[in-house]
Image 1 (cartoon, rainbow, N blue to C red):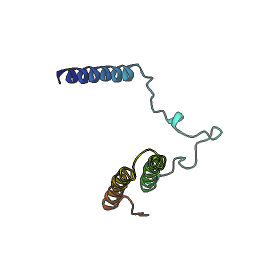
Image 2 (image 1 turned 120 degrees about the horizontal axis):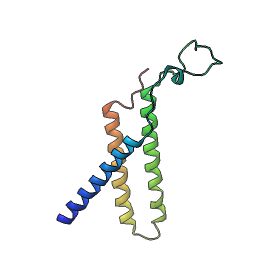
Image 3 (image 1 turned 90 degrees about the horizontal axis):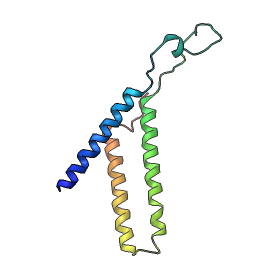
Image 4 (image 1 turned 60 degrees about the vertical axis):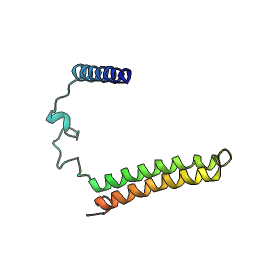
Length: 117
């Protein structure tokens, strides 16, 4: 048990040293009006090139990606039909799909699936 604690401490220390070194050695960028504005043949832009982005659309896209990846995790269960028993595959499938449904219910309950304009 003490060995695991020491290994975790060493890994934490190494990761902190690496993050500190990366932040110190990274190239610092400064926000400049000239560099942050879009290039329009040397003229000042007439309006902002950065349009507002819908956070609701982003949340729907992330939820779609999560469920899409989880569905691809279900595909190998078909290949397991030859190897494992039907009861094991059924239990694994029910467990996995129930986790998906609980996640979907949680997102619905939090209001992330309500499309508000």
